[in-house]
Length: 324
Image (cartoon, rainbow, N blue to C red; front, side):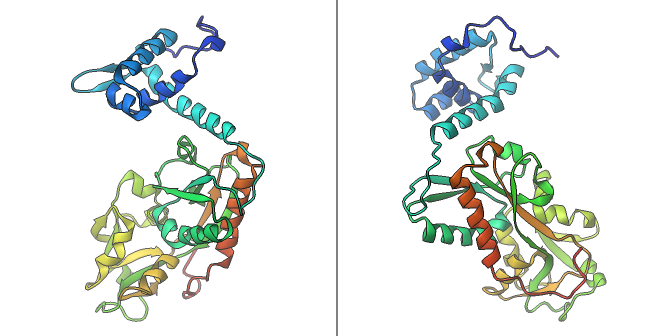
């Protein structure tokens, strides 16, 4: 495998490099065609073609080869993709940096991301608190990508909420809340009484998240990994919000966070029962980039999240000794 070019290559002085080409390169590295890249950057296709020619000359590499059937990136282009995205994000952060923050008047937009189940049981409370305390601030919740934290921050993002099991020590962190797993069943379930035995748990059929690599990074999917092969999964879905509806009218079982189960049982004909098998308690934390650790608006947001978590009504208490 050919080595990537190093910083000692005889390239033109960086001071003479047109940094606007970074935007063109980022668009090219994230688009299927040159026309798509041009559209994403709101320039013409000929203008984007000129930018690509300049980039190829500077890097002395083809970077990307287009054909009728595929788009092929060179090894250098693949290596550049995350670096260019991170460079642009750092530039945006620097240009948008303000150490002055007044929640009553600030009109900036903050972007957060969290697993779907955390969005259901926690982020809605955070949104309400932000509207009350910072009426001009905007909060955007991005769809969660089940990948390592450092990859999450390659996209524009202020705060990520992740399972503590998947958090990274290189990023500042604040614990938000923890919860246990329980079982959710239809209130007319004919096979389960007030409690469920371990034998019943494994004899009943279950509804669960689709078993994919992403599902294994889902906080609930990861917590139940030690039961893989022992549960009889009858129905799988890629949408966590669909799970409660799948058990209504039948004898299926869902294993989920107690806060989520309580929320569903309050609005649907469902019943919450303690999980009869040992499962780990799940803890969720907020993480952000270390260079923003003293930024007032970031500190305000994570502290608000912590206050919201402390004010949340505790989940109903299960039988003791069932959570690890």
